[in-house]
Every structure is written in C-alpha cells, then in structure tokens.
Image 1 (cartoon, rainbow, N blue to C red):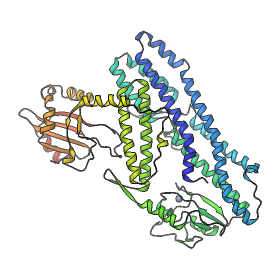
Image 2: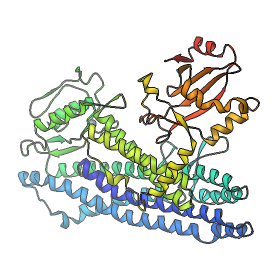
Image 3: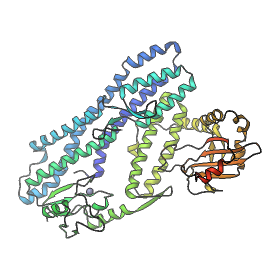
Image 4: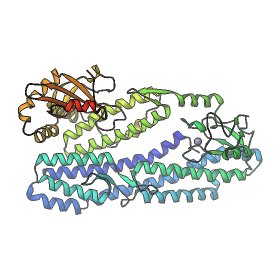
Length: 544
Ligand SMILES: [Zn+2]
C-alpha cells in the first residue's frame, strides 16, 4: 500500500484538477455578472438569452468532462502503482517460500484484475462528478440551505443579475456580493450517496479514492498471502493514531494471535508485546484493525522474514508526538486536532481565493478586497498552526489555478473600511476572554440603516453622540450568550444610550467574519430598568 503521504499526493492530482474546474465555473459565472452589470437596459433581454442559450454553459460542461476524462485515466495509473507497491513488498515472501513470482509487468492476470477494480472506481467517479450530479449549496428565500444543480445555478444567477441590475447599481452590487460569496464558499458539490448531504466534490472524490484503494489493498493481500502461504500480518503505521491503536500499529502478529486481537481477546505480538482485551489505555471497546474509521492496513507476511518497517524508537516517537498539545488563541489542541485545523484552514483559504477570483472577474472590488484580506489573515493563522504543531505545510493544497494576489483590491477594500471607521475600542484592557484582531470600530451602512430605521424617531437626535459614547462611556458590559459582543453605555440628561459592538476575533472556532474590524451592531436609548433587568437575568456582565 502507498504510504499515507504518497496516497494523499496522488489523490491530490485528481482533486487539484477538480479545483481547477471549480474555478473555471466560478470565473465564467463572474464574467457573466460583469457583462450584465455593464449592459445597456435595451440590450439586457438579448444578452440574457445569449448567456443562457449561446453555448456558454456547454463550454463549462465540456471543461468538466475533460477533467473527468483525464482523472479517470489517472485513476487507472494510481491503481497500478499502488498494487505494484504491494506486489513488490511481497516478493521476499515468495522467494522465501520458493513460490513462483512473476514480475509485475508480465503478470497479465493480476494486471487485468487491478484494471477491473480501477474501472469500478472510475465509473463511481463519473457518477459522483458528472454535470447532472454536481451543483452548489445556496440559501433559498426562507434562508434554508439547499442544493442547486450546476445548470440551474448557472441560469439562476443570470436571472438574478438581470433582475437586480434594473433596480440600480447599489442593489446590483449588493445582490452580486451575496451570490459570489455564496457560490465561492460552497464550491462545486455533489450529493453524498450514503448521507444524502451535499459535500464538496474534491472531498467526495478523496474519500471515494481512499476507500477504493483500501479495497484494492485488501484484495491484493488476501490473494498474495494465499499464494506465498502467509502465516502472519504486519500492521501499517500512520501519524496521529487513535489511542486504541497507538500501540498496535507497526507490530507483527501470527495469524492466530491477530485473530484474537480482531476478536477482542488477549493477544501477543510476534515480538512479545501483550495486548490484553481490557486495558487501562484502550478500555473495553478496542476496535478491530481496519474497522470503524480505522485507517490502518494489514500486510500479509511470513513471520521471521522481514523486520517491521518501523523500529520501536520510531513508533514511540509517533505516539509522543500524538500526545503533544499546542495552544492557539487560548485554546488547547492535540496533534490530531491541529492537523484537522490545518485542513479546515486550507479549505477556507481555497474558498477565499475562489471568491477573490470570481469577484475580480465580476468587477466587484469590495468583495475581491475583502477576500484578499481574509486570505492574508487565514494564511498567517495557517502558518502559526503549522509551526506550533510542527506540521508540514501543504501550500499546494491551497493552490487555486488563476489566483493572483491583488494589491489594488486589497487597497480598495482598506479604503472602504476606513471610510466606515468611527473610532477605536480596546476590549483587552477589561477582559482576556476575547482575542480582538484590532481595536478599530466600524459602522457599516447596514448597521447605520438599522439604527435609523428601527429607532427612526430618536436616532437623528442622538446619533452624533456615537463617538462620545465610544470614547467616554460610563460602563462596559459583556454579553453572556454571545461572548464576542459588548455594550458601552452612557447616561445623558435626555437619553441613556447603549452602543453594541461585535468584537472581531480571528479565533478558529469563530467561523465567520474573519478579517473584519469590530463592528457596531446597534446604538439606541435604553428604558429605565433595562440595564438592571439585563444584569438580573444574567444576560450581561459588567467588566469595567
Ligand atoms: Zn487503526
């Protein structure tokens, strides 16, 4: 079997191409948005027809079909490489037993068997990735996330763009901002057969390939083991083993002892290590190897012929590393969790790159700049996690074809944000419960609108005092349910004002709003017992 690292690399060849297709789709849709945004009203209907039925969508379908074709060819190659690896490993046992070992290239029967398995996987691939099966996760009118097929998405975006362009530029930009963000964040997805849920296409293919290669390996081992009359097994090794398999990985067993291990009985490895059915480390329910989410493999061997692949020292080192803890944003992560964080960040960075590309294509500078900023923050975080956990960085995983850093988009965004700045507030002087990314406080047009609409009667009278509250507040409160929301209050002769600010944190568990400033949520007068009630109900807590 291929090592975990190599396995990941070969699968990456496939997923990189999928990512390329994803970017291609988003770009095309982005370009359509731009054309509609620039069209004269009199040309709109014609343009709409052309974009919908002028062969543009067919180009997308062709591009994706091409990717599928290349990937399928690759799947066959990958299967042969993986199988050959197993076959090479077994050679010493054939020799030891004086069994006939036909070189891989000449072993026609074996190769056609491998090809047959590859074909099954290839047709699974086609089912998962075909244009009718893929689409995007989007929000419907009621705010529920639904799966929308690729061709429907393509046409709906055109409809939406045409509809909103006729309502003026700011409506158009706002609507497109939402759509681009949604599509970029979703990426191409496919419906997972087992769960019925939409999953990212690249993840679906990765999972499918892993499963398929595991099947290949198991079938090979069974067959080869029979041919060279295997009497034992060696268990594969991977980093971050689960506690119940940490000690058993890399060990050799006789078939008899291994059977005991698999059936939850006391077992002894070939080098004499005892694996009691019940132990302090593994508890009662030790999993069998290769079952329930276990990524270990079993190799058929002849006992006494080969030394285990990993020495005791190397195995110990892996376990020690698994138990190491790191701290990020005040939270502790073990080694496994750190690798998961890495994966999450890789995905997010790719999403933002896709959004940036699409927004640039659509001419939406604000969103392009926002995405650019997030990429910067996320990449910094990614490096921090990797460095602290001593993990290799996988920059190629975040490679998005066609992505170029855009300094102008970034500058445009910063300018936009600076226009919204109303002052500064540093929450860390009062509490260490938050990790603010900045002390800058901004007021978005959305929040301003909310303040003036929902408090229409009074807002014009007190609105100018926002800066004064920000600089000369009486008290600071923290919301108990929303840990990153604070209240600044100030008593005036006419009003008792409350300014609510959402503090921006780049903590990894706070999924949204990365790269933003602290934002004013609302600003309004309070009734007489308002604060007392909130305190009594433990809704808030005073922190100054
Ligand atoms: Zn395992």
